[in-house]
Length: 151
Image (cartoon, rainbow, N blue to C red):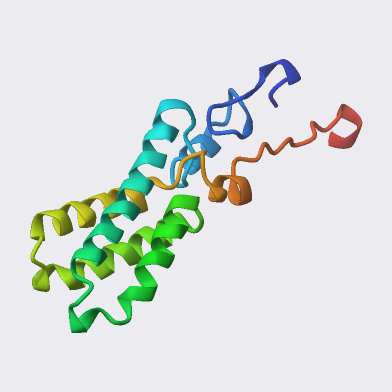
């Protein structure tokens, strides 16, 4: 049984001991909401995907096949800028861009949007987002049982 002195807060935000490290491996499966420079870079990535999607929509505003996207793309761009439901919104942007890819006059921009949306869907929103406020890191402190409770 680990002593109270052996307990520490790991980088994953979980309270664990130096003896069992099973929670650290589990934490790598989930978004960690990076802060600092990586968090700012994810904010820039979200805003650049939103801006590029709106620019592409403006360039193709007269295409008859884009009637449903005229409403959808600005909503997705707003959600990306706010960082709300980011992995799902980025995946939806990826699908929309993949469907547009064959009909576009700007295939290079579309390819960049597809790859950046995929990266954002896999990395998550970062700490500067509403997702981090709503679903962010939490520290779980487990009580240490006393000797009397163990008997």
